[in-house]
Image 1 (spheres, rainbow, N blue to C red):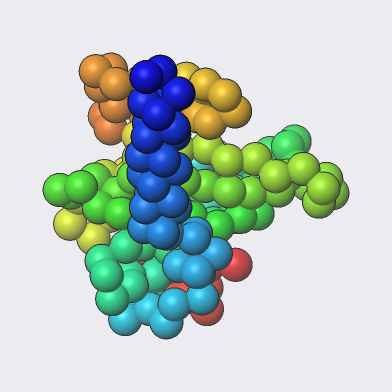
Image 2: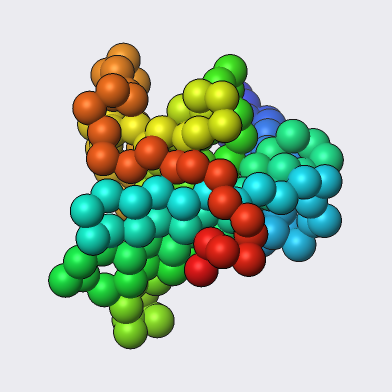
Length: 158
């Protein structure tokens, strides 16, 4: 009696896992999709600069490129992928840092859209099994921030 029950549970589990994989979206595929609009932003704080190129895709998702140049720190160059929830853009920033091309990092970011400006929020981040995410139930602060993005021509944001 136990063996057929275990076998049936195994089949159901395999079926559920395969369905989940079929619906997963490959982040690299988002980068290849042609955007319906592209906007560029730049944030300046003292000697630090963040350049952001943001592409809106047909399905409403956001992709793009971000370069973070901080004083006395290696440059961070990477890609963003995410979506708006209300007026807040939640993205994963996948980047390499400086000359270390072999190691990729990935951090969550929350960016509040206020008119024509974007505000990079500060929130508590946890990591579990190598995945970083904002702590559920903890607020993201968009008031006491360093980086406020203003719109720039895409040729200027480099």
